[in-house]
Length: 192
Image (cartoon, rainbow, N blue to C red; front, side, top):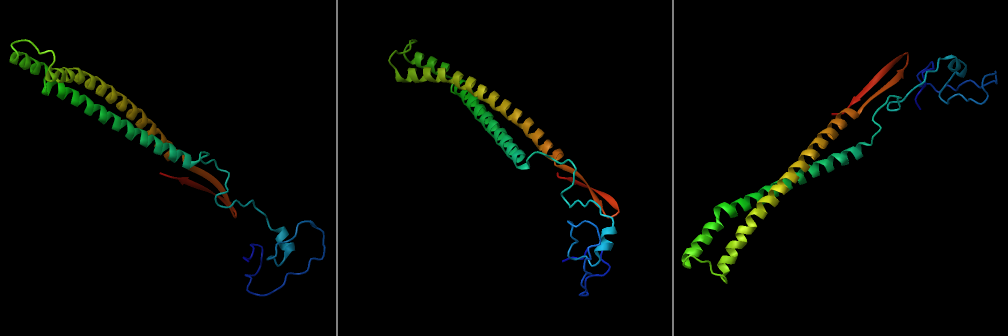
């Protein structure tokens, strides 16, 4: 047991405290076991001790784990939005390739020239070229739509992610005043 501040000795001697003779005082309040002279200990000033971490300062009231979950979710949404935007860009590029690299209109002209200026009605080649011509704009416009949706989702999630990270940096600041002997101390805790 550690000696109290009101003791006169360092606790190395095996001296028993004097017996309490019932000399007034609080009958309900018993002296601590390590105090040799309870009458002197009663005269010592008693300060309000605040143990470390038990201060009355206002720290963060939010659960940091919940904030970390929100940050991870915002990061995932940002990545998902970026993935959707990349997929939309790839679709739009494939539609552009179909329309301008494959050029179904020129292939139809070649087919018509091969058949004396008229397109054959029951030709599989004609139907596949017409299918490519119809698929190209669909791929372009749907790809551009996905690109825009992914970009907007990623941008909004990125803004939210930045706000949550800034909130985590600034909200985990605690100030707690603590009494120490004859003075006071202020503990600052900042987490970056």
